[in-house]
Length: 442
Image 1 (cartoon, one colour):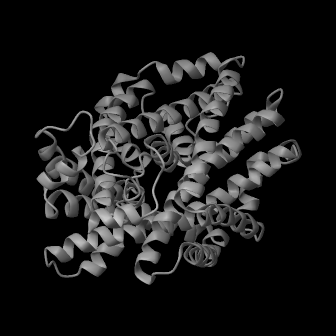
Image 2 (cartoon, rainbow, N blue to C red):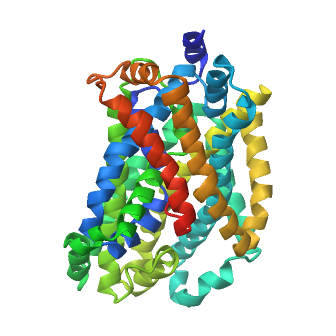
Image 3 (tube, rainbow, N blue to C red):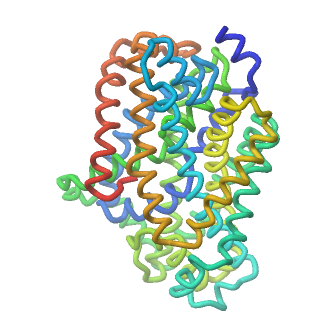
């Protein structure tokens, strides 16, 4: 029965397209916005040591689990988790199974608000308005204004239109264009950034390890949070993409490729932003304002900044939209599962409702902050834990490894079972606790 469900379901046309779409989901604003300043703030190259450890040991474990969970049942997160819980006659399956989807839906709501800001800044870069505004004060005057509603609507509309075309003609085609273009643009911008006068200090800042930071637990905590959230682990987004692959696809290889290219994009972004910040005497560890104040200030001051600013914000749009595609697809697939509506009706409905619900978030920055904290600190990580427990414990770790190894050129050995069942699940739970203690680590 499960094989038939998978064969009748929309699917990616190839492993390459699947990986590009997964990279698109993983490569988001966090790669540019958060990774750059965290890399600088927490020890430069030293930060990469715990980051790579967590990404390639725990991040890939989580990705393999979520891909295989979706493929095993031929359903997205809600349907797959509910089916496993119902098979084991575990009470509360309807409530438990909806939590990961609620998490990714919540991210979609506030994420679109930020995408709207990016679109606005792109429009300004195109018309060269960075030269006509006070970059330091403009963001505060723009946030919470009625203008943001228009840009929110544009952000939601772009993703909605793409998803109406389905998996192969929508998700796949969009990512097949956006992801290669994103990396090409990043390389162009990187070359421009590192050749700026004074950029060498920024390169040293990134490459020379500050080993003392490895003795600070906060460095490891932030690296853990960055690793988990950068590969888009939330118990829903990667599960739904996994439900669109066939049984011959190599899941371990796909997970490793996703983690590698996602990390590469983050490092490229850091080498675009940080050297340029040093070249113009700006604070490279300025936190979230890096993207909307520091970067526009750089392009405002740079020779040819008008062109490079437009190119930069195009790349950020691609990174952001490729992520919202995944978030909306996870939400839409769950809605289709519950209602049996067709794709077009479901996508349009989710798009309209998401836009309406997000309006208060775009008009009230305090509400935006509280809502995004609730989702990213508690609900989304809880979704990761639920999916991991359901797949690695309730479905069974031996069954899980068997599903992951199906189609793998290099099957995982028995060593994977304690890693996934105990280490990954416990660390995923720790992410929630640490997020609460630190006020957010992802």
